[in-house]
Length: 321
Image (cartoon, rainbow, N blue to C red; front, side, top):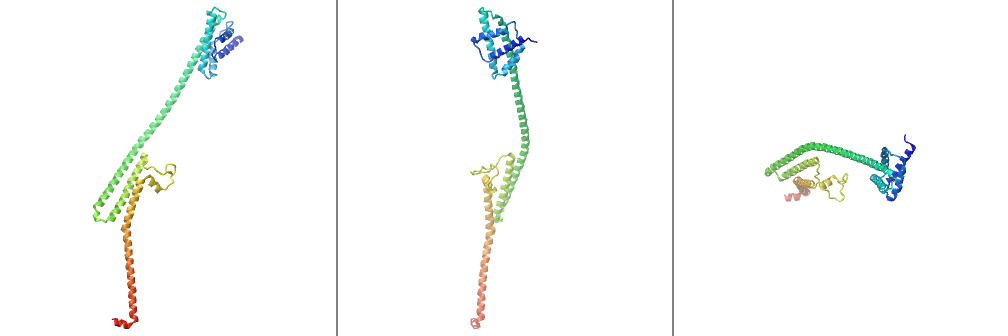
């Protein structure tokens, strides 16, 4: 067990070291601090090395600037050591020369402990950085696995999409070739067919082929996730913000103008041809029948009037005969 005097001097030494770690001292303060060290080490007092580690840990933990604390303490102890060496040994004033060796050991022990603490902290910092790098590497690994899984899914999806696209384009080619064959047959027999039937057949075939090809291309655009719509130029467009407010026909006119106007033109031509072919002759025939019936009615009325005149005047009828 340590004596009370030894414990008291260790406490004084700790308090003095705490003061030296707060700020740098000049030569004016060296005399007072040297006297305090002399009073502590008087009577053969020897400090223990094991006291400095918890003390320095406490000093560093209680300060915001760890590097500044260690520098202040180291510089101040070196200043006091040089002051004692120059003032009391080299100048021949040796009344405090006996504390030079304890101060020298104190500086050596403090520097050694500070070096060990700094190295320990550097190792902890490196270890923390290593943990951060490991976590970052794990995160990158997870991202790489996610990307690889996504790439694998995209490759599998791409294979399926390629097959679907090839099948759709094959259907497009077959539809186009079928329509071309139909038009070729119609053109070859145009001399044997009335122009009205030819125009109607071409309009119906054009509608079917065009809309079928567009439907297949629309399916392809959905597969490859690339829109084929035109950009809506309306100032109050709501196509991209939630559910569109305009009707379906108006939306087709804005976003698919080529499809809209092609169908409108073909339908207008088809309806006009049907009207000219079937409605006009029917109207003409109805007008002719109405005229004939009107003339027949007028003739019957004249015949009835003549017959009545013969019956009323027999002598005139006989004279006439």
